[in-house]
Length: 305
Ligand code: SF4
Ligand code: ZN
Image (cartoon, rainbow, N blue to C red; front, side):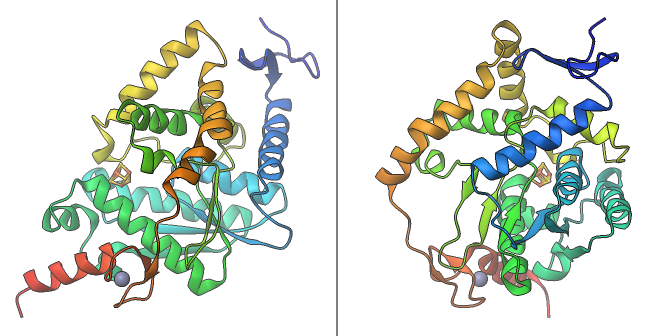
């Protein structure tokens, strides 16, 4: 049995990549320290900034919201109700978000895709002939940004962890999707109506985030979104875990070296795509009318008078 390196009690985790074993009391302290270090290293949150956390009800976003408030940051939550009724996914995940909001005494804002756009995500995907995750991603990005702009939040924080980021990186590298690679960074600075986006959990694996959330007794929705099944990112995560098993630290090296050495070059090469306000809603877009307004229009055409 391993002992905690800090206090010699029974360890609950051994992190091979850090050669560090910690107990249930010391681990959350280490985790918060690492989170703060990541935030400061990347200058994710400036003093006095108000942060909007994208809260889904899962372990990563709830753990992130909790960690940020523990560290003393001004962080409120935004829950986007996707209207996914299979297994009561949306209803149940919202309850977990509300429970945490009550515990930490911060505001949880809620917006509903059906109310804002006209239909819930599953129907929206069908009428716009997109995969559910593609429609969902576009709508979430839009609603988070609009809410932050309208309510004075200058940073949007998401709970992406190292497993998520390394899997996305692998997927983009396998197809050399340079325009995506150019934008894959722990911080995307604000520009032309787009609010800054930050990922304070990039240093942690999925398991490390789960342990932090569990040790802090934060209930979260364990079930995956029904649309996540079969996603290629799950396959990439599995591959990366197998590589990590053989060679601890590879996952972080893969991601960190990319962010340090390759992403800035690609960002410079690709340049920034010009953004302009959408003719209909005023939110930034590369076209005349944004994706979400086009979805809205298509829905209106389909809705009988
Ligand atoms: Fe949306 Fe797809 Fe994520 Fe489900 S898995 S929440 S549909 S992006
Ligand atoms: Zn628009």
